[in-house]
Image (cartoon, rainbow, N blue to C red; front, side, top):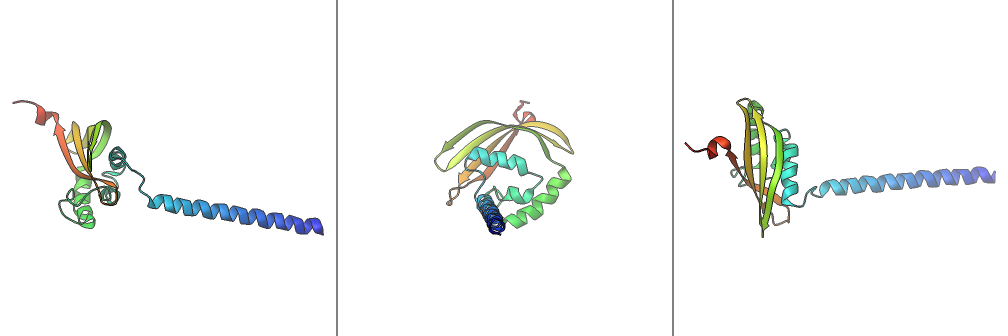
Length: 153
């Protein structure tokens, strides 16, 4: 009888411990998902390439209001999403070539190659990021330089 009771105690302790570990892991996962998954301008740009243009909702979270031309995230998503789907924009390559931070502004240069319905195009992109008051970096501007733009007459 004693061993039977002892076994239940171990079972309860084991179940309780597993439950406690699972709850800690779940709460840690929630806390971690609420934290920004990036902290540097480079990481923001890398996140951008993971989500843009396929997940326009997440991409909007990485931008400033100025980047979205003064419109809300919801309005930008509603306008930009259908345009990008129609264009069928895809990045086939995006490699960060250089980054520089000066105070609350950062510049990240990317060598990229895109494909759209109109064809494919290698291009250089300059991402200008600003640090928000909450300390997070956000994309404020993107300047695109293509070979046809840089080529002389």
